Image (tube, rainbow, N blue to C red; front, top):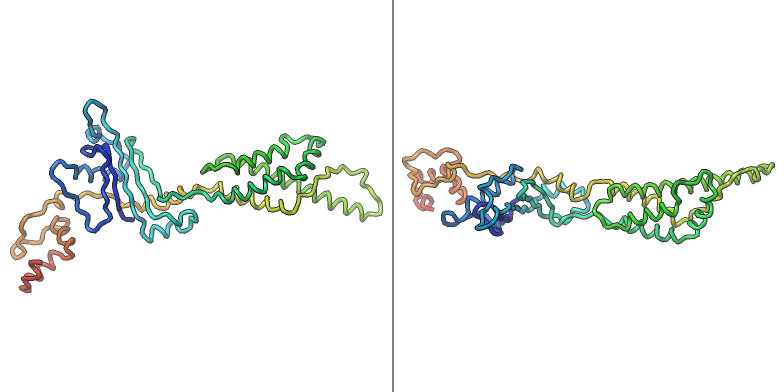
Length: 318
């Protein structure tokens, strides 16, 4: 994961939106004293934790209350990051990851583009449910239910309408509404099961030499048309899918620990001398600014010393 952009406002000297593109190599932040360079780096460091902002960190404005800090860092995903979310089908287009800290000190995460639930499952179930609501099968069920003893607490038509309302929703999370799907599916399965059991029982009686059909109490459920038999697996798969965490939550959980920590240079790493005498000076301690400077030039102290000892003035000067 690589930092490519940062946007900061309301933090110390950075009052208005300060957006800096960082998708370059190397990145150099240059400016006069009091321009906000340190404020920018300190703001990024705030993304490491949820510690509250101190009063002196909030930008003060004339004749008004202090501003609320707002810090956003945008990262580009690398191949390892993408592998971690490969098992989330809705996240195939996710290429970036945002980390946001607002004035209340809470840190939030957002993949970009944000993955959404696959609403195709709802639409497939909705089409069948709406057809069933207008079918002769439901009319037959409605004629039988008033005769049942005991009567059902809720009529099948009501349960069906409840299921339709749920799958019509475009809400990201159905939450407890899934119970309406489960309730209608259970009623549908019960009616189908009893209808088939009665069919078998009637067949057994017809094969029996003694016709005892007059002594039987049949409910005479109408048989479910074959095309609606798909409703059971559709509703079962839909309920299972909707009960899973939202794809965005799955991506956040997979990637949040991959966010790099912002570490400021120590004073030692910030003190760059104007002149270094390689011939007479000992190598500066690890972490010294000159080492970072030489690394940017794709070389090192020991390599430069080697050039010098080999009397390669051209390389040394470079």
